[in-house]
Length: 358
Image (cartoon, rainbow, N blue to C red; front, side, top):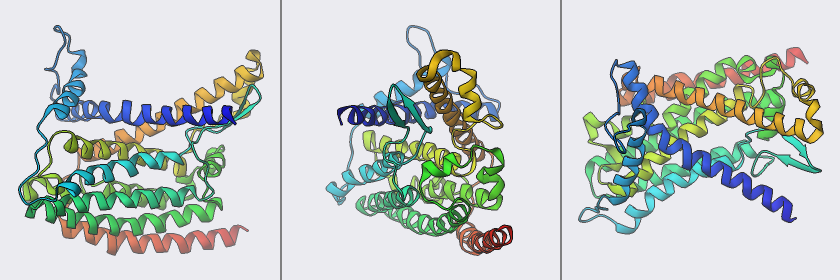
């Protein structure tokens, strides 16, 4: 009992360290540098410690210090309680989704079965969508509680956009469930050991629709109409400053990581290496003994999983700095008139193919 509790606690601390401690602050620097490379600029390089700039990495520390020390301004007429609560509502669901996302398989280490997921729910995929949808309330409440017309318009856009694309995401996932026959994310990941069983090959149309809908859910360019600077100042977080402003940004970057993780699990082979099975990996390290070989395979699988996640984070940033912002009517048209019918067609075609094969 104590050992199981300790293992679970270690997994929780590991996920928090990776998401909140590493990805959330470092992605601010990565996005600046990537946009600079794409635009033939140097990028962030001014912050230094004793003359050392470390390629601009100290900007992440400077941003954190700035967020913590800036005045927490609440405008007149705003609902103080809801104004403070909304960024918390936005950031917590982004972190909670990782409770059911596996970052490796199952391994036996020193007589203990180690499953690299915090909570291996039978309805893990449903849990991800249920929790992720709660973040909508944070953005809607933020706009309403700010007593600002621009904020309210941004929150209304957020609500309609997130609800619209959640429909497409849900229908797209049905094709994945039909193929793998389970909502358990660990089983979906384990089923993709053979590269021919990867979701991107079994559900290619579903992959592109899911990825597009995920970016729209995260409200990043080209789907950032809820915070369109040229129209709404800053949208739903116009009246936010300091730490609460930083929490909205942290939620956005953590959602980028969760999108990369979910896409990796569903479509990109999870923690598996193409053409290399787990048995093959174990044979490579059998000289280390059973525990040593399992430990090495576990570490390799974790590294492979996060390498794939980083690739999809890079892909999201590349899209963000390549495409222009869609008009709001174009975003709605894409969601309801193009992606939604395509997702329904994808379900029918998947069903017909499964019937034909079996």
